[in-house]
Image (cartoon, rainbow, N blue to C red; front, side, top):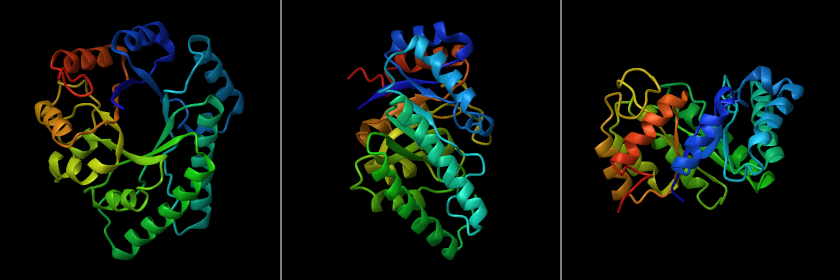
Length: 263
């Protein structure tokens, strides 16, 4: 189902709520991937209570899960166990709040394509996320491309899990723009599995999280690809400031760009 998302700003909740109302947006929370928050139950409750003052229902909302140094496929058992702990902490928060889903990164070493490494990544993630999806049936699990240089590894995992109803791909369109693969290659490879997206702008070199339309990404091509491959996912405008979010929403709305198609 197509729907726009924004990241709420706890310091400007009235503005976040106004934007959500004006553009029909849900929220994606970026508070709960920070290690210091994951380690502080009191802080978690304070943040949840603050959001609950403004929102009684989180069932359309999503959150970004832990990703700093999260490597569940690590051959080092200490790193692997710590990574699994962080992922499960994220899922527990989403379950506690009744959220729709959680976004995780692939966690791959950028550009490292040793056959044995890729096979370890695939088998470990397949086994782990199969179990996690079964354990948390009410939450969607979205895996996002981060430093991935091509879509093939993520596409292989998504295809192996295509029958899992609460697992899918989060295509970060801006991350894809930083690779040598074309945007078309990314969308074509992942289209059957895309259930969520992140969009923002950049200069093709740095992950700048600029407002949509402020960088060098071709947004006409973006909209054309969404139509051609019949993408029907939710879309986070992954720009932190309320001003940047509003600028992005206005740009996409005025141009009728996905998820604001005019026809």
